[in-house]
Length: 55
Image (cartoon, rainbow, N blue to C red; front, side, top):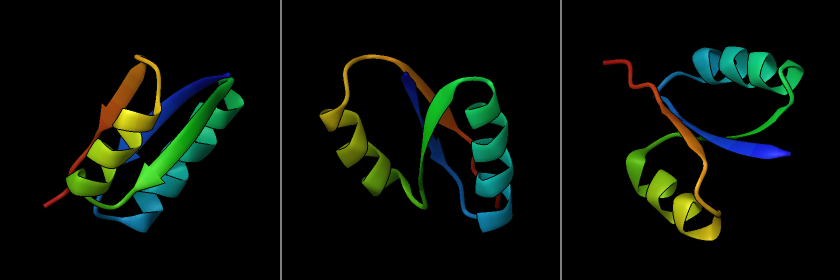
């Protein structure tokens, strides 16, 4: 399964995107900040990354 990292400041946006991506056959990994995303990226093979920041 392809993994996708979602970075977002709002829980509701992360839940929405996670649900959509799961139904599309992806395995979403939701994190709340870029520092955490960078740590997750180092654990994964190259792949898709979604970075959605709400300010």
